[in-house]
Length: 414
Image (cartoon, rainbow, N blue to C red; front, top):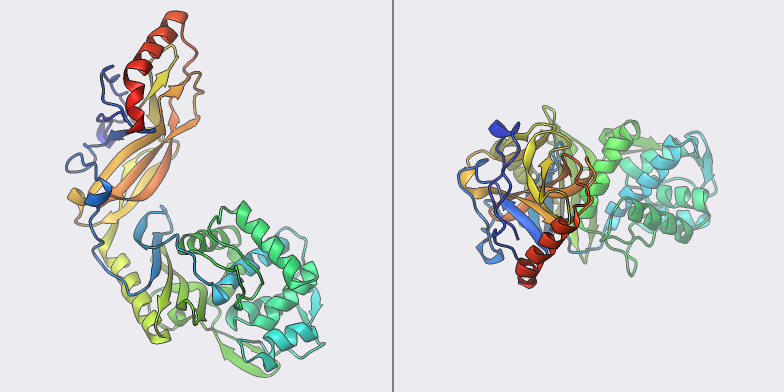
């Protein structure tokens, strides 16, 4: 690793000095401490990571700021658990994508098959919109039933109408999940009803929720609708956050014996959007209380901190075999983080890249990341770009680079 100070926001107009050849190296990645952003430079080893300032009863939890993507709280965010009705978020993403791309019309009607009725309708004893067997329901009403009533019959009707079967629709769900980068999730059916091999993670759920809210804003509004009436049966929205004063506008709840009570909540308080995924709560009451406590804490305990303006020089990366031995790194967009109000000494930052970079390096190419850490845990990672091009060096430049690599590169194994 390479460790050196880099530019502060106040000095972002000046390129950093080239580091000495003898700078310490080791590991597969290069890091630079950003000491001037915060109280003091700090590199936390794994055993130095402090516990979070708030605990949660949830077995899995992830709390994320919607504007910057800053992680405010995490607990087993990549541990898989059965999704229950949270799987319907993926079902709705597939449906929303088809509607917004023009492949599916809202007034198209799909039949309620015997399978949809028995598995997810009135006889099933599960959440349902009570659609009559062999009736036809428009896509728009099926979407409302699936979201507001968390209706299994609506989800199955959509799956059968769009793909022919639950199984074929699940293949589409998994293909879309892969395209969206949901690496820890797998879907077997459109409802979330218990099935072997079906699982999600808190991180994937937050990623999915952010995508739906951003890319399908008009259809997303259905998640905030308070009630829905079908077949003369009135049902209120199952999202408990809509009933309390936390600025909720979505999104989904779930329950299974295996994973307990779960929730993906989205709130908008004065323009600050927050995403909360959690699972493993003992009761519905505990789920609601825990969600409110965490959301209130995030609203009261954090503030937005601008870090670097667009185009500001943040630091430099070593270059191997180039006409120069380093390249300045700039922020391709403005970088800000939502950070604890009173936590300067708990906050640190580092530049991370596979290093040294191999020449040639193209101007504007994203070649590194700026990692922001709180209590030693990474809470935000933003790309950094090469400020200028670095061409291949002369034979003597490459020879000197090779000597340097032989002298210091062996330390990367540690």
